[in-house]
Image 1 (cartoon, rainbow, N blue to C red):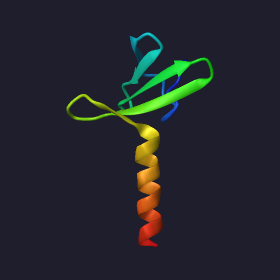
Image 2 (image 1 turned 45 degrees about the vertical axis):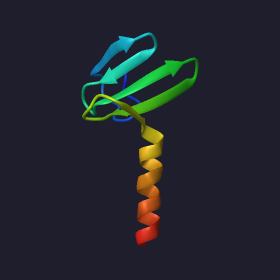
Image 3 (image 1 turned 180 degrees about the horizontal axis):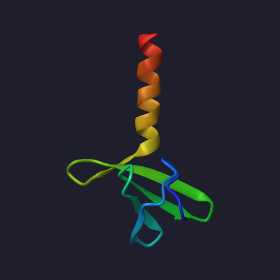
Image 4 (image 1 turned 90 degrees about the horizontal axis):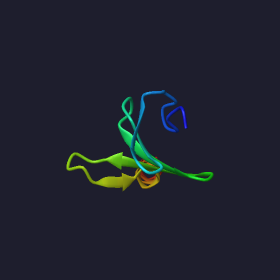
Amino acid sequence: MTTCPVCGQRGIGKVGADQYYCWDCCVEFTVRDQDIRIFNVESDGTLTLYDDLIQGTVNLEVQKG
């Protein structure tokens, strides 16, 4: 993995086995085979699944409209 799956930048660091951190958009992601899971890093250090955040944002926009 040479670029971030979220922002496309190359500021990637390895934080564990198959686990990476993007210094540009501040997300962690895991890569196993062809499966990529993206996590938002919360202020207390916990990880929240990035897809859940996107779905929540989309649902809020639909409800407003």
